Each structure stands twice: as structure tokens, then as C-alpha cells.
Image (cartoon, rainbow, N blue to C red; front, side, top):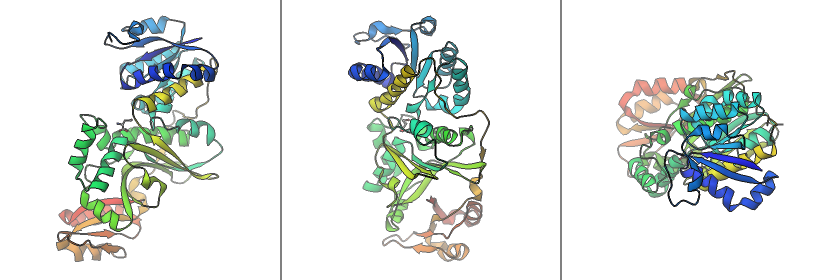
Amino acid sequence: MIKIAVLGYGTVGSGVVEVIEKNRELVNRRATQEMEIKYILDLKDFPGDPYEDKVVHDFNIILEDDEVGIICETMGGTGVAYNFTKSALQRGKSVCTSNKELVARYGPELLETARENNCNYLFEASVGGGIPIIRPLNYSLTAERIESITGILNGTTNYILTKMEREGEDFADALLKAQEKGYAERNPEADVEGYDACRKIAILTSLMTGKNVDSEKIYTEGITGITSADFAYAKKCGYTIKLLARSEMAGSDRVLAMVAPFMVPAEHPIAIVNDVFNAVFVTGNMLGDSMYYGRGAGKLPTASAVVSDVIDCARHQGRVITCFWDKEDMLLADVADVERRFFLRGAQYAKETIINMLDGGRKIELEGRAEDFGYITSPMTERKFDDICNSLGDAILGRIRIL
Ligand code: HSE
């Protein structure tokens, strides 16, 4: 029998309790032993809740209880959650988390603490919610040299972009709808500015390379500058627009990691990932392409991933599950050095100048648009494209990288 404590009885924490209770029989069978939730840690009381008698407010009760072998950290943040996780691991209690911020910032340190104390720190739910992606990278694709990872890792922004594309809405209206549906936070900055996707690609890139990728060093651009006009031009050229979190090896010792909106060819598998769904498209040197798709957020999908980690911990009690994520920093390539094609939306009044400067691409005209025109450049470095755009100033109305 293993006793479990859940830290944080919010959306994901209550989901964890629900998954363990609803699927009790199969969870126990697959864990190869019985599991029981002994404590739920939260600041609040939950009168009338079926588990109200398990609620405690003092983490030390959990820490000091030798019966508790596995802890689910579903609190979020990097303050208290870090202290609780660290001290639990130091006591040999395994921790399963959905907290991407904590994993991105302290992953290698907490993995080391777990190793030193013969327990595990597992984080399947930290990226892609219920989609299995951490375990595939850690177990299934271990014979591969991963060449690139391309992810739609944020459900809120994918919902907003899907609305803009399908209904011709502007960013502000689509964001409002996302908030009404409860997808976007009241303060949606972490989603729309790309920070959430950035933490997730930092975790995936660390697992891809085995070295630490600091999320704060990853080039990150959100979707606030994307307009319905951009979608109109994208459609005309056979593209859609997605917020991609992307990593690709740049030589043997560097990785190019970034988060930004991209124009994606309509026939690319990731182009059909819509609404709040997430997907991770992985290219390995032997397998080639594989894609992992599903619900990247939400109570039960995320909780299901946490409980899958709980089962893994139960199966590996007293044994460390190997995870290659060293403390050593991975070298990051400079985004400016990368050569690619770009979409540009320019002011009609400067059309000739812009086309002369860009030379070699293709112009896109849309009926009924008198004020702007579209242009797809030939491949060039981002540095060169930046220089051209900067010299053109206000005549550049929008620009998006092309995948
Ligand atoms: N805000 C996140 C999203 C939640 O929209 O994908 C899951 O990490």
C-alpha cells in the first residue's frame, strides 16, 4: 500500500483525486499495489467535499509521515512549491508534478536531489497536459538522435489563432472569447506573450539534448501582433498561422530554440491542430517524423498525466528512473543567423521600394485591400531581413517567419 499526498486542491489537484478514485481498480492494478490518498494540502477548507477530512494546512504533517511515499505537486509557482518539492525529495518521497515553471527552472537540481535520495521526480503533465511526450522522449525515442521538435504547446493561443482564422476575428475579440470560455487567464500575459510555451519548449529541449536549456535565454515572441489581415494573406498562399515552440539542432553542439508565430504550410501535420489542442512534432534521425496530439490543458487530461507518473513511481519504489538532463548549460544558436523565408505585409505607398530591397521573392495581392500588400521573401538570414525591415520603418506593417 502506498499513501499519496496531493499539494494544492485546485483544478489539477482535484482532478488527480478524481482520476485516482474513479479509476481506482485499474490504477491499483497497474501500480501493482493499492494506493490511497492520505492528505490534501491546501490553504482553504472544503466543507462538504467528500475528501474534506483529508485536507491539512501544514506541509510538515505530510513530510513527517513515513507512510507517504508519493507526493503530487499541483500548486504551481516556484516559491513554496520549490521548498516543498525539495524537502520531500530529500526525505526520499517521490514527487509528480504538473508545474512547468518549477520544472523549467529547477529541473536538473530536483532530478539530482531525487537521484541522491533514491526516489523520483516526474513531470509528464508539465508539457502538453495529457499528451504523453515526456515519457516518449525519455523512454521510447532513446535510440534516436532528435533533430528537431516543433510544438503547439499552448492551448489558449491556439484557440485564439483558430478563432481568428475561422471567423476573421481580431486578436482582442478572440482573446475575450478565450477568457469567457475560461481558457485564458484573467491576466493572459504568460499565454499570449509566449512565456508558457517557452517554459515547455525549454523542458523538451533539455530532454532532447540532455543538457540544461535556460528558458530565460530562449527567444520568445507572442501573438499579440498577429492581425486578421495576416490570416487573409496566409490563406491566399496556402498557409495558416500557429504559435510554434521550436527546437532544432544547429550543428553538433548547439540548438536553436525559439517561440514565435510562424506561417505553416496547410499540408503540414501541425497545421490541422486547432482550438485548445496541443501537438508535438518530433523528427528523429532514424524514425523520421512522429507526432503526439491531444488535450494540452484542462483538469482531467492534466491530472491523468500526473497519475500516470504516480503509477510509474509506485512501480519503481526505491529505484531511480533514469532521466538525462544535466545541469550543464546547452549552447543556444542565435536566431539572427538562421536562414529562412519570411512573410511581410507592407504599405502600398512603399511597395516599389520594398520589393526592390527584397528582390527575388513573390508579391501577394488581395482583392479589396488598398492599403497593404503581402510579400514572401526568398531565403535569407533573419539578421539581413531585420536590417531591411528596420530601414523601411513604418512601411512594414507586419512580418511573420515561414516554417
Ligand atoms: N495556459 C496553458 C495553456 C495551460 O493554455 O495551454 C496549460 O499549461
